[in-house]
Image 1 (tube, helix red, strand yellow):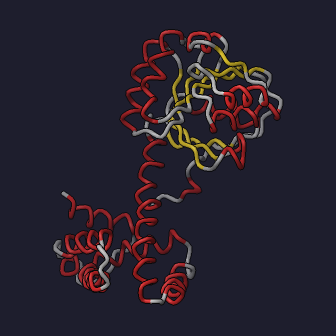
Image 2 (cartoon, one colour):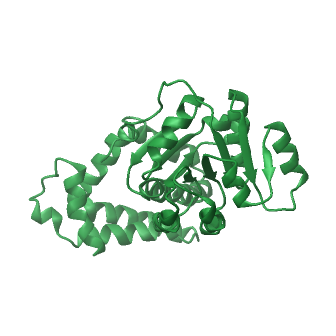
Image 3 (cartoon, one colour):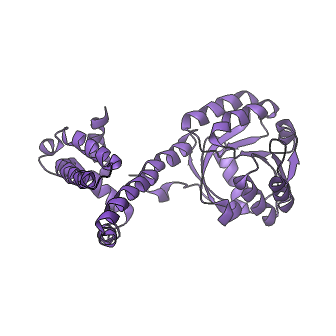
Length: 308
């Protein structure tokens, strides 16, 4: 497994900040937090394009962060060296198409919207004729708390330029890869665990509440999880499941039965049983002679076959 600490080997730089012209497409919460923090840090030229009519909140935010609201994407291109798109993911292609013809090799365009790696690659293709550098990025953290100092993971040919220019201003930009879409994949796949964990937490909490044993259940879980770092636990679970998938499927099946007895639809637990049964059907316990693989990478190589 990749250690998160390894992401961003080319992370924040210690060089002196230099003035540049920043353009922002989509002046909502993220755009405002970015602009406000950079303006307070001393950046002198910030422009933003937000579709008219502008709300009173947008006008107030622009005034507070010394942002000049421009009328068209083309005007934004003329006013900017680095352009950061912080639209909704569904608007990423619309945003780049609105400005691509006005960009040239002097521009660096960064899309920070939550969109798939394929969408990010389509953005790169849209920009190819312009000669502009492109980087896709994802945000971790909140501009309400950190202003422009939220963590950003970027990838693509423009990633180094973006990091070298903005990190001296106090941003926390880490480079994942020169390959477009890699940053989007990191955050997107992270959601499998982060959002799946919420769904499991809901399911477990409801069942525990109905039994009146919430404190006991979560104290037991915490004792196990808190004993070792996440990466150690994750590796251990992957490695040992190659041999113990059957037993773990039985245990999950028992949890499913308890929930059904309580009248709860065990959506997540049922899916857990299904996955573990498919891993069990691979016969890895017999194949390995009951010996657990020494690395999570080799375990995944074996387990991956369940989904083929």
